[in-house]
Image (cartoon, rainbow, N blue to C red; front, side):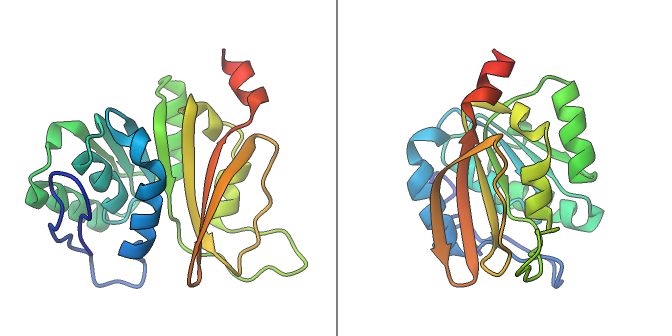
Length: 199
């Protein structure tokens, strides 16, 4: 696993030897960042279920202005700090929050913070044929306040398993879908109604 573009391209990232971490494959990252290329420079970035911080660090390498990583595990959060240091990226542009993702979302909204890009590649959910998904990916989509963390033109990039059939609430508009192996990445924006509510 490595940084694939920008000033830290080629730098390797370290990850804990744990089944709890499922790094986003380089091919999937490449597809994501090809889609987002024009949005990254100068962006404020939030990575939920950050794991190793690979997506936030990729953004900083490509010119993002600021990134926040939310990771509940203190052990995994230490890998984010280590990776930031070893890639030589500006650590003053990175904030690591060691807490539950949904608690962090509530606090960030309360602090009136907004982001141009939000990434989440949470632990995969189970196959859910004939029933609504209960995965973390679905919980993020269902979270009524998450859209308010996005700037009006921002995008939410959500990874999940093919076997996990998600329902897209009316608060979101799907812009694009990327598929790779067992993974699906959805690129979403806030629905027009949500944008109007905040303006």
